[in-house]
Length: 84
Image 1 (cartoon, one colour):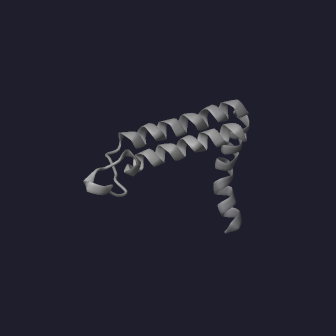
Image 2 (tube, helix red, strand yellow):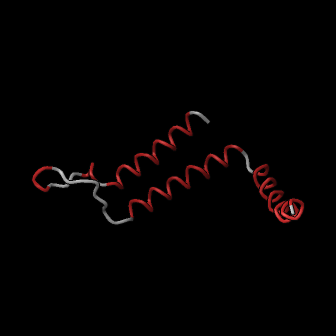
Image 3 (spheres, helix red, strand yellow):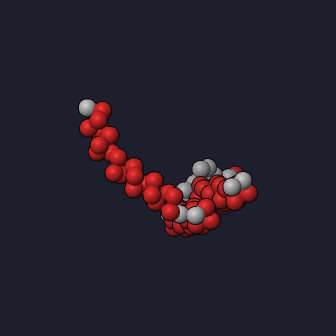
C-alpha cells in the first residue's frame, strides 16, 4: 500500500521540485509580495466588518476588521523583505 501511494504522489512531487528549483529567490520574493498585495486588495473589496462600536454609536475605522487584516498583511511583507 505504501509503495502504491508513493507511486501516485512521486510525479507530482517531482513537478513541485522542478518548479521550486527553476525559480530564483528574487522571483519568489516578488511572487510572495504580489500574492500578499492581491490578498490585501481582495480584503479591502469585502464589505465593512465591525469588531465593535465606539461610544455614542460612532464606528471608528479602527473597529473595521479590514484595516487590521491589511495591516497584518503589510507587516508580513515587511518582515519577509527584512529577514529574507
